[in-house]
Structure formats: structure tokens, C-alpha cells
Length: 148
Image (tube, rainbow, N blue to C red; front, side, top):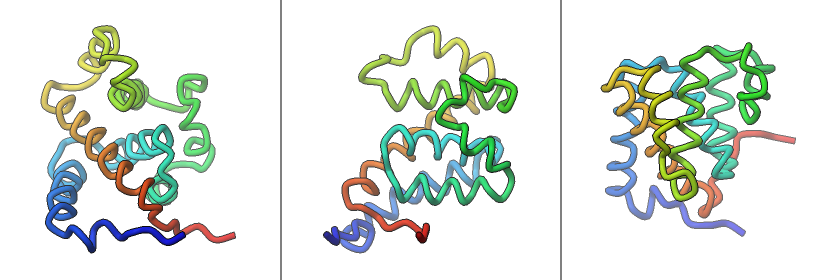
């Protein structure tokens, strides 16, 4: 079933949300690859096919397919991910599942040790933005670029 195209129906809301996306992708000190890695992990947790497809494609420009494939189990293959990537992925999971985790002090300590205060806030904006996009992309079934 074809679902609504949310950004055509509510362009002002889409503009506001894309403003946050633009901020985290263009105006932060976070490495672009790290941002897309976080976008991918958040989208995997939330089950947004469109965003998983898009951010996997973004990452393939700079990251090996082996590493991308193992993002869901990043904590089992620590040799593939830098300390900062592991801290970002852990914080992404913690914030995305905040109703379960309550953003624990332990997770916050790890994240704040790996990032400057500004970068940690920007990382959290990155996570929040992708969660918002997932909550539109998944229910409205945005299409994927993948072909059979």
C-alpha cells in the first residue's frame, strides 16, 4: 500500500526537520563518517528501511562493506571500530532506547569521556534527528533505492 509523502504534505515541518539534519551534517565538528554511522545504527534499531538503505549507501563511499555489515554487532568486533566510534554507537543505542535505558550515568560517562561537551551535544542532536526521521520514514514507508 502506498502511504503519504510526509514532506510534500507538510513542507514546513519537513523544512524544520531538514534544518536539524543540515546542522548535524554541515555545522558540527563531528566527522561525516561518524554521523552516517550513527544514522545507520539508529535506523537499524528503529527499523526504518529507507534510512538503513540510504545511510548504508553513504557509508559505502568511505567504509568497507565488512564493517558496515557488522554495525548491528559493533560491540562484538571492537577491533573494527575506533574508541570514538564505539562510544558514539553506545550513546546512540542508549539515547534511542531512552525509555528503557534512562540515559544511564555509566553510558553518559563513557560518551562524555570520548567527546568534548559541544561534540557530545552535537552527537545527541544527530541521534535525535535520526530518531525523528525514522519516526516519519518507517510509518510512511519511504521507498528504498535497493533493487532485487
